[in-house]
Length: 283
Ligand SMILES: Nc1nc2c(ncn2[C@@H]2O[C@H](COP(=O)(O)OP(=O)(O)OP(=O)(O)O)[C@@H](O)[C@H]2O)c(=O)[nH]1
Ligand SMILES: [Mg+2]
Image (cartoon, rainbow, N blue to C red; front, side, top):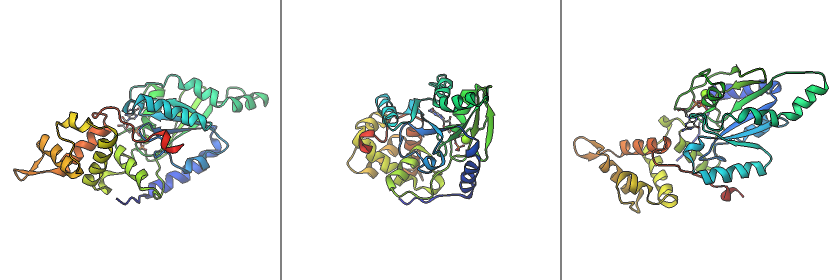
């Protein structure tokens, strides 16, 4: 599959982030716990250099706990502050205030020496589309301050949110990079729903996911759809169509519909907790 996607609003978003970075003390980077490396935008390191950094493994409820822990160690080893969170349910969100203060303690100390007291920490919340930035901010604020939605590109412009007297957050639109050098990165981003489905071939994508699941999560498709995990990926997709009664024109199998069902089940955690990439591959 070929991915190349950089809509105009992302260029604009990037410029906005570059313009605002000077106001920022801390960059809070959300990654998807199912693909912690592939969901990191390589441009963020450049943008956030000289800033305090915090990585949130978001959607940790959708990934395997043992891998969440392994990934947290991985990023800690690289010098980042890290926290596992589930922004939808609010898990891990409570401890964030303390982590923010801790990550910014040098800045707070600097302020104190200059006689500046009680200046709030300003944090920019960044991450790829659909990773959960706005949901996280709402969870932290305890109310719906910003719009969320289960598709990429919901937040269009910047928005400052004052959490309390200590912290102000900047919500930003998700950005992806201009092109994926590595096709597996593009593929994984497509699996989790960070690339608009309209530009993807759903059946091809579903067959790639089937290939991965059969290898790393053997038996999961069998259990979920009561199918045999045939060698041939398309055969599997046909079986899912059959099992879910996806038909066109009366009796022909609708593999397109089966592909959508599979992707949807995966994205919403209905196949169980699944991690798509592992720290040992990035040692
Ligand atoms: N299961 C689960 N779903 C989450 C979590 N965080 C966010 N979501 C869901 O992910 C979807 C995207 O959330 P948003 O907060 O709109 O994502 P965003 O990063 O602001 O997206 P853009 O504004 O498009 O860049 C929504 O359907 C959320 O309910 C989480 O921790 N777990
Ligand atoms: Mg948003």
